[in-house]
Amino acid sequence: MSRVPAQLPLGVGLRDDATFNNYYASSANASLVDHLSHQLAPDSEPFLYLWGAPGSGRSHLLQAACHAASDQDRRALYLPLADLGHFPPLMLEDIERLDLVAIDDLEYVIGRKRWEEALFHAFNRLRDAGKALLIAANKPPRHLDVVLPDLASRLAWGVTFHLHPMDDNDRLAALKLRANVRGMQLPDDVGRYIMHRGPRELGELCRALETLDQASLSAKRKLTIPFVKSALNW
Image (cartoon, rainbow, N blue to C red):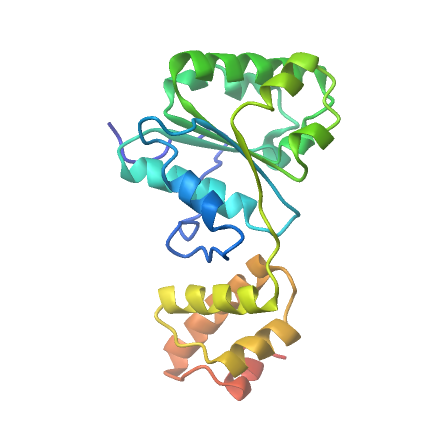
């Protein structure tokens, strides 16, 4: 079986850097990450629902779960509905042939009859086939304005996790982890400067790290505050 995760003809793929290895799990989120990393194991809960505010790492974790499934020679599909929700839900057909389906941004299709019905039937097929389903949204299931009662019932299956937001100490630790994965040493004072001067959203901060990685390799310089100022034009 192919180790490459199943992907849509629409070109939706997985970020190479969205793995469990470079995700910083704070103590509040450690249990969630443990469940995700073992979701495909025998006797594990096959349906997990996680919710959190934008920027909390939902998409990273869903893609990480798909990468982990691929590493086990299992077929996985990542569906970000923020990008795909304007299409008809034809992509849900036959998804029970996959081992793991990760549906991101569920809130974007809630309230739309055709999508809700398609999701309801897809959930049933996945359950009957014994496959795993991972869902992420910005709210817990009971707070979504679901129109179809049967779908609301299905969303209550399994285990629900709240993806807790990071405080500044967690964000610094996450940034240092990402830097370390890239082979960079990020001193605390430089990390705090980047957090203070740069965008608040962790994903944007990590993209700044990509720029710094390229700049430091090119200039053969360590990360210092003056170098960061120059490389990022701050």
